[in-house]
Image (cartoon, rainbow, N blue to C red; front, side, top):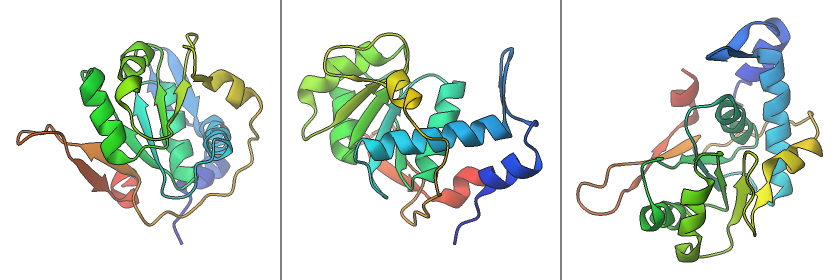
Length: 182
């Protein structure tokens, strides 16, 4: 069984900073609550243990909440390089088999431009104020989401990082859970 480090820190160090970004701080108790809400959001979209969720954004506190929420739900985060464009983004989504693709406010348009080339049934989630047609607004999902979630232990890995693709298209490399929390 995997140790739930986030719940442990939320219980023992609730007011200690988990992340600091500029003048904003996210403490462990808040991160735990938000990560549980995120886990509920993605399971409400039909994600089950081992499913891949693509995430395209700059570093942000939203990203920290999303990454930790996906881990709690046993989902695999697929970070999408913000320098990629249409066909390259579509390749990462198609190759990874992402069930959901989420983008931060500065990257919704880039990911939306790739939609036409994405195969399969992928749900697109917009984090931020802009929600293009056919996308689901993350804010609305979070507003209805519970702060209670029992962590899922996923043996598949916590993330799939795409390489630079020096011999062709980028290739996904699995990163086990322990690497991300060590």
